[in-house]
Length: 225
Image (cartoon, helix red, strand yellow):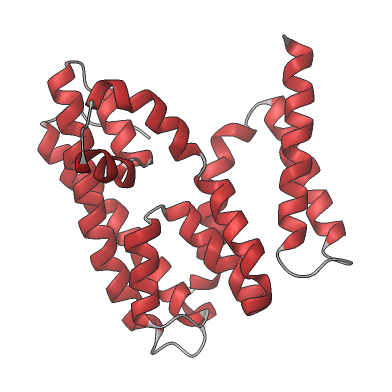
Protein backbone atom coordinates (compact mmCIF):
# COMPACT_ATOMS: atom_id res chain seq x y z
CA UNK A 1 0.00 0.00 0.00
CA UNK A 2 1.36 3.42 -0.94
CA UNK A 3 0.77 5.94 1.83
CA UNK A 4 0.72 9.65 1.01
CA UNK A 5 2.92 12.18 2.79
CA UNK A 6 0.12 14.66 3.55
CA UNK A 7 -1.13 15.50 7.03
CA UNK A 8 -1.88 12.53 9.23
CA UNK A 9 -5.57 13.39 9.44
CA UNK A 10 -6.06 13.84 5.71
CA UNK A 11 -4.29 10.56 4.96
CA UNK A 12 -6.29 8.77 7.65
CA UNK A 13 -9.61 10.04 6.29
CA UNK A 14 -8.73 9.19 2.69
CA UNK A 15 -7.75 5.66 3.71
CA UNK A 16 -10.93 5.32 5.75
CA UNK A 17 -13.15 6.41 2.87
CA UNK A 18 -11.41 4.11 0.39
CA UNK A 19 -11.68 1.15 2.74
CA UNK A 20 -15.27 2.01 3.57
CA UNK A 21 -16.30 1.76 -0.07
CA UNK A 22 -14.86 -1.73 -0.05
CA UNK A 23 -17.05 -2.51 2.96
CA UNK A 24 -20.18 -2.19 0.82
CA UNK A 25 -19.25 -5.46 -0.88
CA UNK A 26 -18.89 -7.21 2.45
CA UNK A 27 -22.27 -6.02 3.67
CA UNK A 28 -23.99 -7.17 0.49
CA UNK A 29 -22.20 -10.54 0.46
CA UNK A 30 -23.04 -11.14 4.10
CA UNK A 31 -26.72 -10.44 3.47
CA UNK A 32 -26.88 -12.67 0.42
CA UNK A 33 -25.09 -15.41 2.38
CA UNK A 34 -27.98 -15.51 4.84
CA UNK A 35 -26.96 -13.11 7.61
CA UNK A 36 -29.43 -10.42 8.62
CA UNK A 37 -28.48 -6.77 8.98
CA UNK A 38 -27.75 -6.98 12.73
CA UNK A 39 -25.60 -10.08 12.34
CA UNK A 40 -23.68 -8.39 9.54
CA UNK A 41 -23.15 -5.29 11.68
CA UNK A 42 -21.94 -7.49 14.56
CA UNK A 43 -19.39 -9.16 12.30
CA UNK A 44 -17.97 -5.80 11.25
CA UNK A 45 -17.96 -4.24 14.72
CA UNK A 46 -16.60 -7.21 16.64
CA UNK A 47 -14.39 -8.96 14.09
CA UNK A 48 -13.33 -5.79 12.25
CA UNK A 49 -10.84 -7.37 9.90
CA UNK A 50 -11.87 -7.17 6.28
CA UNK A 51 -10.03 -10.24 5.05
CA UNK A 52 -11.24 -12.33 7.99
CA UNK A 53 -14.82 -11.18 7.51
CA UNK A 54 -14.78 -12.07 3.81
CA UNK A 55 -13.22 -15.45 4.62
CA UNK A 56 -15.87 -16.18 7.26
CA UNK A 57 -18.79 -15.27 5.02
CA UNK A 58 -17.34 -16.99 1.94
CA UNK A 59 -16.85 -20.32 3.75
CA UNK A 60 -20.16 -20.09 5.64
CA UNK A 61 -22.03 -19.44 2.39
CA UNK A 62 -20.79 -22.74 0.94
CA UNK A 63 -22.05 -24.96 3.75
CA UNK A 64 -24.21 -23.01 6.18
CA UNK A 65 -24.14 -23.95 9.85
CA UNK A 66 -22.26 -27.18 9.10
CA UNK A 67 -19.36 -25.11 7.75
CA UNK A 68 -19.26 -22.83 10.83
CA UNK A 69 -16.12 -24.42 12.39
CA UNK A 70 -14.28 -24.12 9.08
CA UNK A 71 -15.52 -20.55 8.64
CA UNK A 72 -14.26 -19.54 12.09
CA UNK A 73 -10.89 -21.18 11.53
CA UNK A 74 -10.53 -19.63 8.08
CA UNK A 75 -11.24 -16.18 9.49
CA UNK A 76 -8.68 -16.75 12.23
CA UNK A 77 -6.01 -17.88 9.78
CA UNK A 78 -6.52 -14.79 7.62
CA UNK A 79 -6.57 -12.43 10.60
CA UNK A 80 -3.63 -13.87 12.51
CA UNK A 81 -1.34 -11.34 10.85
CA UNK A 82 -2.93 -8.64 13.01
CA UNK A 83 -1.36 -10.29 16.03
CA UNK A 84 2.08 -9.81 14.53
CA UNK A 85 1.21 -6.18 13.77
CA UNK A 86 0.31 -5.73 17.44
CA UNK A 87 3.71 -6.99 18.56
CA UNK A 88 5.45 -4.30 16.51
CA UNK A 89 2.98 -1.51 17.28
CA UNK A 90 2.65 -1.94 21.07
CA UNK A 91 6.05 -0.40 21.92
CA UNK A 92 5.26 2.65 19.76
CA UNK A 93 1.76 3.22 21.13
CA UNK A 94 2.22 2.17 24.75
CA UNK A 95 -1.54 2.00 25.42
CA UNK A 96 -2.74 1.41 28.97
CA UNK A 97 -5.96 0.19 30.51
CA UNK A 98 -8.99 0.17 28.24
CA UNK A 99 -6.93 1.82 25.50
CA UNK A 100 -5.10 -1.49 25.10
CA UNK A 101 -8.40 -3.16 24.18
CA UNK A 102 -9.26 -0.39 21.72
CA UNK A 103 -5.76 -0.47 20.24
CA UNK A 104 -6.04 -4.23 19.71
CA UNK A 105 -9.35 -3.77 17.89
CA UNK A 106 -7.92 -1.07 15.63
CA UNK A 107 -4.73 -2.94 14.76
CA UNK A 108 -5.33 -3.65 11.07
CA UNK A 109 -3.44 -3.36 7.78
CA UNK A 110 -4.37 0.28 7.22
CA UNK A 111 -3.65 1.68 10.68
CA UNK A 112 -0.33 -0.15 10.80
CA UNK A 113 0.65 1.00 7.31
CA UNK A 114 -0.10 4.68 7.96
CA UNK A 115 1.62 4.61 11.34
CA UNK A 116 4.82 3.00 10.09
CA UNK A 117 4.96 5.45 7.18
CA UNK A 118 5.39 8.42 9.51
CA UNK A 119 8.76 9.53 10.82
CA UNK A 120 8.24 10.91 14.33
CA UNK A 121 6.82 8.93 17.28
CA UNK A 122 4.03 11.48 17.72
CA UNK A 123 2.94 11.20 14.09
CA UNK A 124 3.17 7.43 14.25
CA UNK A 125 0.77 7.37 17.19
CA UNK A 126 -1.59 9.82 15.49
CA UNK A 127 -1.39 7.84 12.25
CA UNK A 128 -2.45 4.68 14.04
CA UNK A 129 -5.34 6.15 16.02
CA UNK A 130 -6.71 8.46 13.32
CA UNK A 131 -6.56 5.79 10.65
CA UNK A 132 -7.93 3.02 12.85
CA UNK A 133 -10.91 5.12 13.93
CA UNK A 134 -11.48 6.44 10.40
CA UNK A 135 -11.53 2.97 8.88
CA UNK A 136 -13.74 1.66 11.70
CA UNK A 137 -16.34 4.38 11.18
CA UNK A 138 -16.45 4.29 7.37
CA UNK A 139 -16.20 0.50 7.18
CA UNK A 140 -19.16 -0.02 9.50
CA UNK A 141 -21.28 2.64 7.83
CA UNK A 142 -20.58 1.03 4.46
CA UNK A 143 -21.34 -2.40 5.90
CA UNK A 144 -24.79 -1.24 6.96
CA UNK A 145 -25.47 0.20 3.52
CA UNK A 146 -24.20 -2.95 1.82
CA UNK A 147 -26.28 -5.20 4.08
CA UNK A 148 -29.44 -3.25 3.28
CA UNK A 149 -28.57 -3.30 -0.43
CA UNK A 150 -27.86 -7.03 -0.30
CA UNK A 151 -31.31 -7.66 1.13
CA UNK A 152 -32.82 -6.42 -2.11
CA UNK A 153 -30.54 -8.44 -4.39
CA UNK A 154 -31.97 -11.73 -5.57
CA UNK A 155 -28.68 -12.61 -7.24
CA UNK A 156 -25.39 -10.90 -6.29
CA UNK A 157 -23.81 -12.21 -9.50
CA UNK A 158 -25.63 -9.46 -11.39
CA UNK A 159 -23.30 -6.90 -9.81
CA UNK A 160 -20.29 -9.19 -9.51
CA UNK A 161 -20.52 -9.21 -5.70
CA UNK A 162 -20.23 -12.99 -5.60
CA UNK A 163 -16.61 -12.65 -6.71
CA UNK A 164 -15.68 -9.93 -4.22
CA UNK A 165 -14.65 -12.33 -1.45
CA UNK A 166 -12.36 -14.33 -3.69
CA UNK A 167 -10.89 -11.13 -5.13
CA UNK A 168 -10.30 -9.72 -1.65
CA UNK A 169 -8.48 -12.81 -0.45
CA UNK A 170 -6.40 -12.97 -3.63
CA UNK A 171 -5.42 -9.33 -3.19
CA UNK A 172 -4.20 -10.08 0.32
CA UNK A 173 -1.81 -12.81 -0.80
CA UNK A 174 -0.77 -11.39 -4.19
CA UNK A 175 2.30 -9.50 -2.88
CA UNK A 176 3.52 -12.75 -1.29
CA UNK A 177 3.24 -14.93 -4.41
CA UNK A 178 5.26 -12.74 -6.74
CA UNK A 179 8.45 -14.53 -5.72
CA UNK A 180 9.29 -18.14 -6.52
CA UNK A 181 8.86 -19.40 -2.94
CA UNK A 182 5.44 -17.80 -2.56
CA UNK A 183 4.35 -19.08 -5.98
CA UNK A 184 5.29 -22.67 -5.05
CA UNK A 185 3.42 -22.49 -1.77
CA UNK A 186 0.33 -20.89 -3.31
CA UNK A 187 0.19 -23.34 -6.21
CA UNK A 188 0.48 -26.32 -3.87
CA UNK A 189 -2.26 -24.97 -1.60
CA UNK A 190 -4.62 -24.33 -4.52
CA UNK A 191 -4.08 -27.77 -6.05
CA UNK A 192 -4.53 -29.49 -2.68
CA UNK A 193 -7.72 -27.56 -1.95
CA UNK A 194 -9.22 -28.30 -5.36
CA UNK A 195 -8.48 -32.04 -5.14
CA UNK A 196 -9.66 -32.31 -1.55
CA UNK A 197 -12.93 -30.54 -2.41
CA UNK A 198 -13.90 -33.77 -4.20
CA UNK A 199 -13.90 -35.77 -0.97
CA UNK A 200 -14.22 -33.34 1.99
CA UNK A 201 -17.17 -31.21 3.20
CA UNK A 202 -17.33 -27.54 2.23
CA UNK A 203 -14.78 -25.35 3.95
CA UNK A 204 -12.41 -28.07 5.09
CA UNK A 205 -10.43 -28.32 1.82
CA UNK A 206 -9.38 -24.70 2.34
CA UNK A 207 -8.18 -25.43 5.87
CA UNK A 208 -6.25 -28.53 4.86
CA UNK A 209 -4.76 -26.72 1.87
CA UNK A 210 -3.70 -23.85 4.12
CA UNK A 211 -2.12 -26.27 6.58
CA UNK A 212 -0.18 -27.93 3.78
CA UNK A 213 1.00 -24.52 2.57
CA UNK A 214 2.18 -23.56 6.07
CA UNK A 215 4.08 -26.85 6.37
CA UNK A 216 5.77 -26.45 2.98
CA UNK A 217 6.63 -22.83 3.72
CA UNK A 218 8.18 -23.78 7.06
CA UNK A 219 10.33 -26.52 5.48
CA UNK A 220 11.47 -24.33 2.58
CA UNK A 221 12.31 -21.40 4.85
CA UNK A 222 14.37 -23.62 7.16
CA UNK A 223 16.24 -24.91 4.13
CA UNK A 224 17.23 -21.35 3.22
CA UNK A 225 18.62 -20.55 6.67
